[in-house]
Image 1: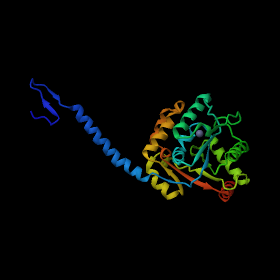
Image 2: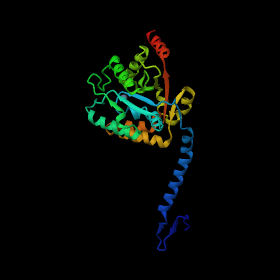
Image 3: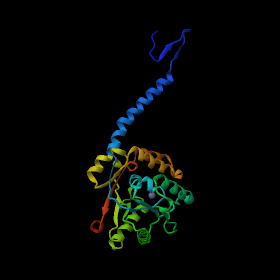
Image 4: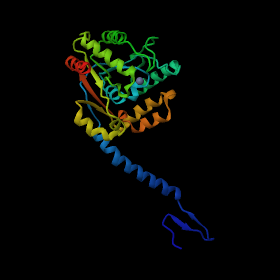
Length: 280
Ligand SMILES: [Zn+2]
């Protein structure tokens, strides 16, 4: 009986697999190299940031985990810039399941993973801003908090949710309306720009990197990160242990927000037009 090269016949009628382990390792390495060459190369090629150079940026989020679940690519792109100070303003401690203290610690760990120092995190612990989709957050209250943070930190760009809040969560949408109200009232400092994170449809949301084409065609500002940076964002997500359920794991694998963020600069005329459309 003739055996393949990696097998040898046994003299006593039995046969054993010679160096089967080595064979498996060699095959796995080959497969891995294939994955790295075929998959990683275009990812590296396409990793790209198109976002102006600001020195002080403020991310306004609603809950601990928003920072990495939605804004991870932008945060990683900016923390890598040597002269950019990234700040986080989180408006609730995420107490929906009475795990506020734990979620605060998770936020700290996640920010540390993303490269944001603890001193740049502000966590608002206010009873009137609970983590609860059924409680309407007052726009005026949030606007005051944002305005205070922008002034005290001398912020040049605020980045937050758009009116659909990526996941339509009312707490996310409320942050947008508060920011828009500041802009409408002329209360944002001159020179402070506002950017909102694009909410995209559910198909685009879960096709991961395949959304690149749509992003390039439809956006003016974007942050697309490499596989290596995406691992950092994934690691930050995994710091939110209390939230790590099966659907979150699927989100990490398939969501486009783990690799790609597209952002829109909003100004007064955009907001006024939007309000007119809403009223009509
Ligand atoms: Zn949230």
